[in-house]
Length: 391
Image (cartoon, rainbow, N blue to C red; front, side, top):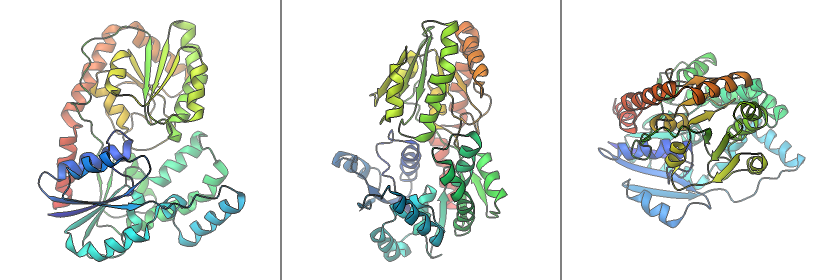
């Protein structure tokens, strides 16, 4: 089978972010038995070595430039983007990444393929005809995500998001109607799409984890160290860490004076870097091995307040055998694999339990690893995705 995968984010290295991780591991699995062509866009942080390494996993790699014109941050620029978005009924982030050159190439070559996949919903814009079977791998509902941010009070620009919410609802239903099959990562996302009127078949295929990159820890460090892992320029991770450091950590420190927190992840925003001024907080930036930082901590905290979809960070902590204290959003789509917490007092109580009960830590560590091994390896996830494309 000849597969064309569209990815406006360059899917290498697979440690760059959640979208890249999912896309890379799916293409890697598909390429074992099928001819895979990737059409993608390259940003300034992608090196020539990244390009050469990605070529090893696919038959053909076509790279198109991202738009180079900077977005106007003035009020006039914002109003112009708002008008364009409503006129075209398409979110600004989709319009901003759109490449006419990539569109023309797809139009000229589409007939050469048996199936085309859009890896993340932003790539839906390139599907204009029904020449071949098409699948959209949504990752998470843009409408559900934005609505959740507003409900949680975590939106950075609530007035803007409220204005865009009706557009996002109509946009998501409209683009879903173009595709033969729709893939989401959680049942919550499927229900969100159903609630806005999407009637096409929706398959739930979760994220996975690379067990070689995230081996289970050899021992329980039995310290008072916490860890959080994620891309630290992402709004939902920034919100999570500000909430935890400013509102939760002081109460934990009242009980455990030596408690420390490592915030591990590339590209930390200024709002994250400033958290390092708080006692016991370390902001690492990019690290050689995320697993090593996970192994050094007794507990992984995942205080996400917004965002839909199965979180790679949750699966990675489970694979590494680190007990989790996480929110409903962090544990979405997964069985009971950690202690749930959503309010300040719930986080403090759960962390207290895990710091004080080595037997509970051991139980959660074992359960998390077994859960990943049984249902969430990329081999298993890739097989399910391949079956969807083949049928």
